[in-house]
Length: 398
Ligand SMILES: *Cc1c(COP(=O)(O)O)cnc(C)c1O
Image 1 (cartoon, helix red, strand yellow):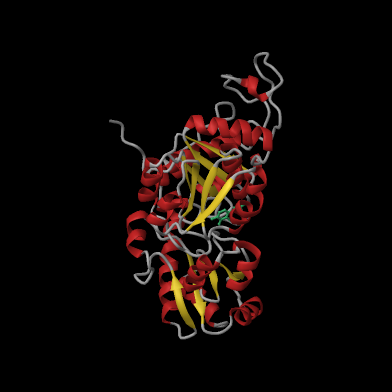
Image 2: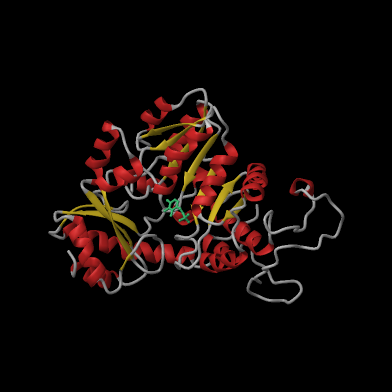
């Protein structure tokens, strides 16, 4: 049996090679939008067939392909396809895999962009959507119908930091005939969790976050079986067109080489920050998968090899007042959306506000959300600064 390289080695070498023409050691950036094919073929992308080369950058291009090969090896996937953003990748999976009459289950609280799209746009296309508490296997099981084609999971979830038990949920979903178990694994990254190994069919990442890691390039990826991804590429890349630019692929590929060591460093700074917050008198509650107080800490230990840098916390004082002080006083941490960057980022997410703008939960779900999230949380993405400096910065505002 051949020995597979370890993840630190794969992060650097997978998808990369010495360029045969220039002998360049680092990857080239190929910006060309069109390619001169070596044989005559039809005009539609569907006629590219088994042609191995590139034709037009919307159906595939070399620098993007190198990133896709790197990501596939990191996730232990047969293949990967990249898109212009995490949302473009999510949209590609949902629209390419579902048709009018199909039923899909989403978590009752997940990433706002996907939640709003599921709630507001999908019903317009005749796709039946329901929302379930994905922290409970029994609840998800009871939401499955004979028409359910897709179960969408996000773990840890943005912004609740709740986990979904991928292995248990994938098992029950498949037993009941669900074709696609999709996991948005942006918060975990392939360093913490590899959903395909746990039984998922497709994985989605916002590359804008940990995988790119430097806050300077948007991107998204879908990973899974080769045949599924070829179909998603033909429909979503070629016909919806939200493809990743080669320049962003080149930046994200460079970022991805340090993903394993960055994730270790994020966790190393995040744990002391979470413990400090937990002991701070102004703070009433902290959710971080690495804390024993996290309600799903046992699942986190089983499912995550790294607890990442994502947490949220609640305060006794009104969050908006604290957020105002943060805008003025923070020196290192930026009061800004997004996450997974070398720089620490914090943002206030008020429960009343997000219930109006995004979730519009029914009474029972709204109760579960506010039981967990109180009046709102500060979502904190711990960067690679020293934990003592992050705590000192937050202490100025709490
Ligand atoms: C940011 C994010 C997305 C969307 O990604 P973009 O690159 O911003 O489009 C999707 N899922 C999760 C969990 C995210 O945090």
